[in-house]
Image 1: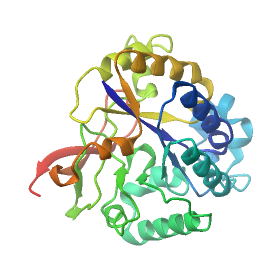
Image 2 (image 1 turned 90 degrees about the vertical axis):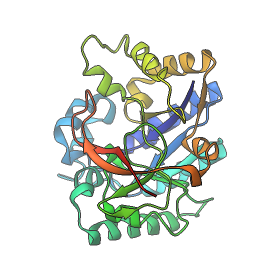
Image 3 (image 1 turned 180 degrees about the vertical axis):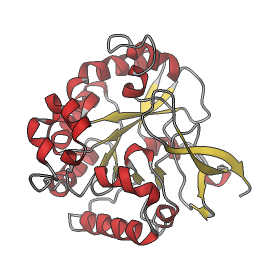
Length: 292
């Protein structure tokens, strides 16, 4: 059993507290993961329902980010934590500028918006110390756009992570072909599991463990939220690590998945749109295989 950890960061609180909490936990279990950081602003206030629901972890002040007050800049702290994550042996990637904007606009945006966002994202990264370079680009809520595939080339990224699916592949979307392998998320999130009958916060780890026992050609990928599993659900994350590591399992980063496969052997698949069980919105999904 092999499970790769995809840690996504969306907010200032996630950066300040969730990421350090997860790094400490992963260090305790000697686990390597992939951390995806945003470099724009925290616009939590533009999503008032979810932010109100998560106010205990995000803080009431987050309700005003992007509305009553300027959303706090995430870039400087994110770049510092990227270096720290690398120093601790983790894989690091980018999660867009504002996760709120990318989640809501990416799928329907025109080419100019996508190109500008990616240019600003890369400029924000290069404005820091540069580090060793991000290995990948992921998107909030698994959103995709044909123009985004164009932005993956140029040796900036080794892989992408913006779909749900079953195994690595090269994405094809509206005629645009990516030259970068896609490593999709295969397992449901904790939130998705909690929307299913009979699943509670007390037994969700058992259901997720059962899901992870379904064989996949390149193992599984599990999405971890710095704002949820890194804060109020840190104990749940520890239970999952114990179960996955204790049953002859291997926990790893997404980049380790890529190192185990020959990219030249990967198939090409269309990217479609759908909803997973327990999901609250449409997301990009690995669809039918097409000729290379």
